[in-house]
Length: 129
Image (cartoon, rainbow, N blue to C red; front, top):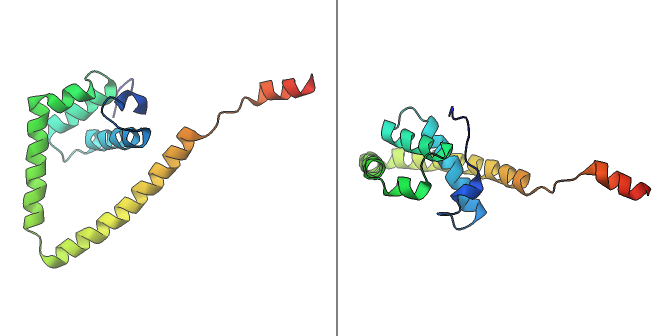
């Protein structure tokens, strides 16, 4: 994504139920924005939300974007229906691997977000007085 500014997780709390869900939504929007194989309308929606030009609630209600989402869901459903049993098993295994990697990344991002901020300069001076 090449936006000058990118929204923060907190700016998604209007639709997210908690900081974890906001973090996941933010990451999903980045993935959509950067995936060239997706419908340009979906990518445009994600970029607009990430840049702060469109509120996420407005994006979810915009007919251009909702149509693109429904179209993508239909494509995914059709592809799933066309899979053989062996392909489904392979897809499940790939998804499990992907999901584990995503969870590790989320855990790292959560730890960074929740890490206490230390101002060692002030703390050190207080102890010397």
